Image (cartoon, rainbow, N blue to C red; front, side, top):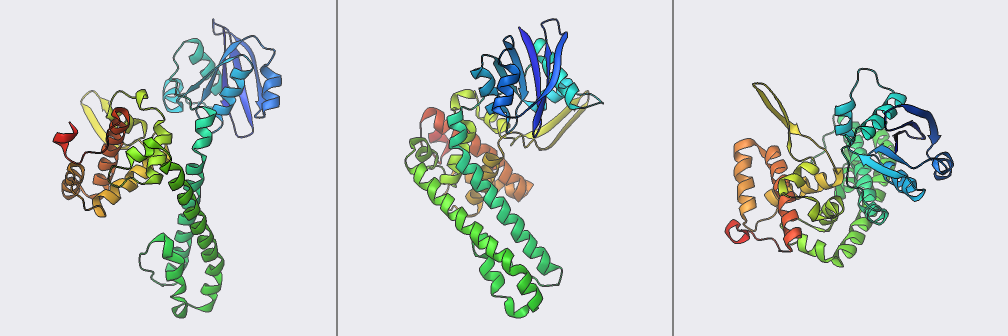
Amino acid sequence: MNHCGLDMGKKSSVFCIMNGKRKILREGAVRNRPEQVAKAFLKMEKAQFVIEASTKAFWMADLLRSIGHEAVVVDPGRTKAIGAAMIKHDKLDARVLATLGAADLLAKVDQPTEEQRVARMPVVARDGLVRCRVRLVMLVRSMLDSEGIELKGCALGVFSREVRSMAGRMPAGITEAIAPVLAAIDTLTEQIARCDESLKESMAQDPTAQLLMTAPGIGPVVAACFQFAVRDPGRFKTGREVGAYLGLVPSLYQSGETYRRGRITKHGNRQARWALTMAANVLLSVVKKPSALRTWGLALAKKRGRKKAVVAVGRKLAAILWSMWRHQRPFEPQLALAA
């Protein structure tokens, strides 16, 4: 079988086709449009296409399979570690992918189905709205701070109201300048509330989500983010694997006598990682019901600091939620009963 490395860009992709002996048969580029891709590879002899995971990779892999080829989506981090070079360009990247395919050195990823990808879109859309609102809030704070106007901390949902209440203490020029920004923040807040309500309704119909929400700090948004990221608890053997999959474990560098642990890897699904850390923050600050997890987190916060404790509790939560899902058991606050 021939092997084709496909380095996907924003508008077009560069490909390199090799035979089993790693001899280059053909190189070129193709536009990232279904009709162009089908035209370029439909009549070609069956080949294994190697594509790095990205936002475009999964629909491309589905398309290539539909026209009779084998498509493998690989982890870009591990692929780059194997094929790293001082000189980098798209043509070389395609050759590296084809070579790794021919040598059977592929770090494959578990590809979600089209149905699973579409089901996750509401979470992605909500995440985008929240990030836009945060950027606008930071813009308003920066504009006020540049003129020495101090704004006290407040919830994002009431931010616009708090700023408008200070209009009497601000020059007219600043009030006029931030008025459209505040209006945009109000619109985003309204749309985020609609997304939350929609997620709440859909999660109320989902038995798995209802099971996950028995854990403290876990609401519809966090349950949806975690469920769409993990997809199938049977993919993982241990809870630590889930934490590593979501990028919540520390990075590690070990060579000879050097052993250094760094910040978390932040590898994997960004929405799920953010949701778990927010849930951990709620567990440590808002939830009052006692549990072994909360007790452990508060003790760690005193010893190592609040930020590290939130990340550690988020990692524990990922493992606990995975175990609850796999064994179909609700959250048990006491360790002895959970065991």
